[in-house]
Image 1: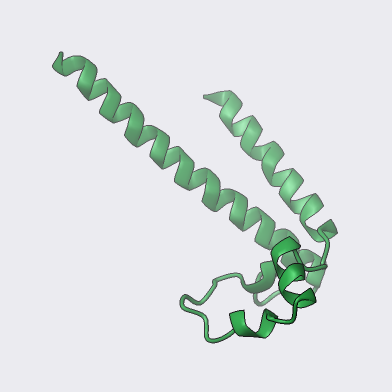
Image 2: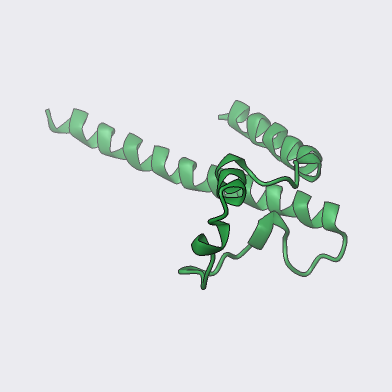
Length: 100
């Protein structure tokens, strides 16, 4: 269990350091839509409002720090969701083994 926290710490460091270095260029799908002239057709009112739009944490003036904060927040959210999922699956599997 100790190792999981070491891995989480490493992931948080990587997210904080490398997130600001990510390319601001459009991703592949956005680039194709831009090149073929239908990018604006895909844009409109969002169905769900993003808590961290454009990978920049709101309320932080420095763009690099805001991007690092978004990377850390995303890493924590992903870790938390997967941790809870793993605990749920482990609990379910333990119950099945006891039931046999």
